Image (tube, rainbow, N blue to C red; front, side, top):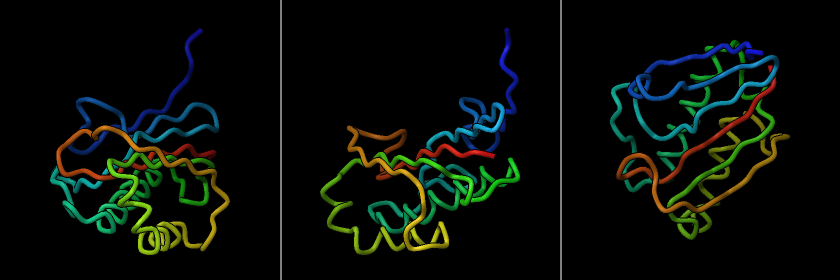
Length: 132
């Protein structure tokens, strides 16, 4: 039995991966990194700039499904240097709050260090699950 899915592909990676897949009321987003519409890294060596761009990209994907940050129930940060992120938490955590529009969003959150991301210069990838 086939599962009905709504798939959205766009942007510099559209030939390789969908940005989001909806099945029923479950929406999974591919990990969003700090790339602009042309595929260039935004904020190389600047974790704060990369957090802002990654969440901008999350919002863009959500908009294709008529969803907002309010629909997110789970997120995971995949980072290349957890020590840098923890040292920058006073800067990056408020940027997360700004993206959600509230200081402490009701979203489960996981932080994981990885050996590398898809392109050199990327420091963070934000992976989300939403209900719509």
